[in-house]
Length: 149
Image (cartoon, rainbow, N blue to C red; front, side):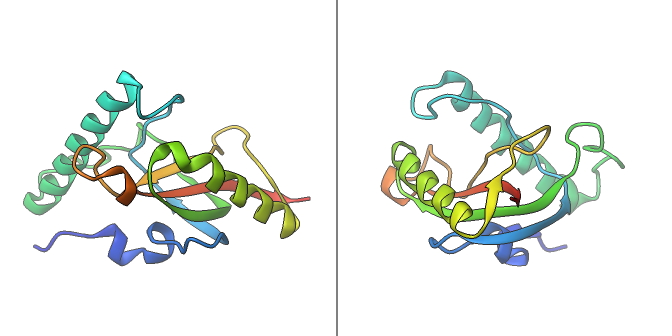
C-alpha cells in the first residue's frame, strides 16, 4: 500500500499561490491544535507540534498496516469547511502579520468580509517541520473563513 500525500492529492488546498485567492474548502477532518500566541516562544506550541507530528506519523503508519480503528477521529474534530481566502506565507512566523494584512486587504477588495465565528477561525497549515527547517524556508498556508458583505 502506498502512502497518501495530501499535498499532492489536494494541491489546491495545501499549495496555494503567494497571491491570495478564494477557495471553497470541502468538508474534511483535520488534526489540529487550537491555540494562540507566538509560535517562536510558546512552549505550548512546541509541544503541540511534536504531538501533531507524532499523531500524523501514527495515522500514516496505521493506514499502511490497516490497523486504524474505525471512526478513530470522528469525535476529536468536527468537519471544517466553507468559503475561505487563503495565501502561502514563506518565511519566519514573525513575518506573518504582513501576509495576514495582505490577505485581509484582498478579502475586502473582493467584496467579502472575514467570518470568524463558531468553529470558523484563522487557520495556519504548517507545511514544514519548524524543528528541521530554517525560518526563511518555512511554508505556512494562511486561511481565513469569509462571507459576503
